[in-house]
Image (cartoon, rainbow, N blue to C red; front, side):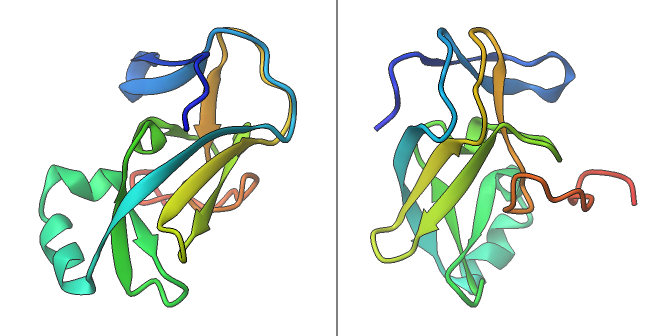
Amino acid sequence: MIKPYLYIKNADTKGRGVFTWQNIKANEVIEESPVIVMSGDDRLLLDKTLLHDYIFEWDIKKDKCCVALGYISVYNHSNKSNCEYFMDFDNATIQVKTIHPVREGEELTINYNGRWNDDKNVWFEAS
């Protein structure tokens, strides 16, 4: 499920990103998409490819990885994101929900560290 008011466009220097055609209320689920779960061995191979930037750690032990379908892998990172994602290991899905109201035309972002307000650097940021 992807809300019909979401769309993808270039996001300045960040490449493609997810945007909205309309205002969105806080705590609204805007996407729930399936994932393809892969083993830790598969992750070692994927880490050597461009897909490294688009996979998520998976499972409670984080010993697997997944590629998310839908728009999930296109959301850009922000340390103070306006959305948060939730992994459902039993159903192999990821859900994206707004944290606060989002205005029409605004980019929707997630924090790649997992918590919407986690200010730790991610792998592509300078330490």
